[in-house]
Image (cartoon, rainbow, N blue to C red; front, side, top):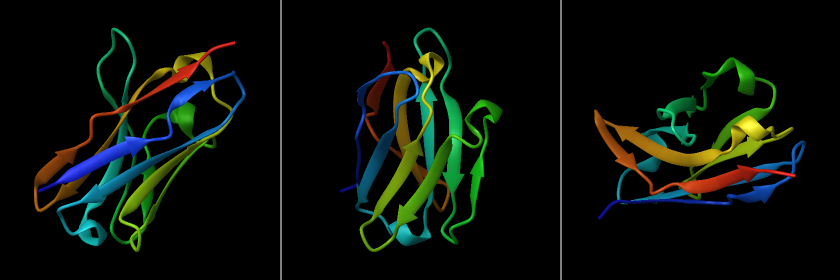
Length: 116
């Protein structure tokens, strides 16, 4: 049975940092591409970043470049999203997705709220 569980969200002030974790099981994590998405209220879900099995990564949204970093620990079957210099507009539910052999495995999301 596949499980993808995000954690690490919460309330943070502007300029603060959070590190999200995504623990996965039930599929071969080391071979999967892992991605973080986010969905702000009233907006469509958007891709934040993807890290491939080789460790290569792509940050997709310009506003996040230099602030967000995606990483993975294959020994722990866990992906991470380090978020620094958080802004009000980073408030969203953040989702983790594993993709392997054309099959997507989604987590339930973790809420990140940036507020003063």
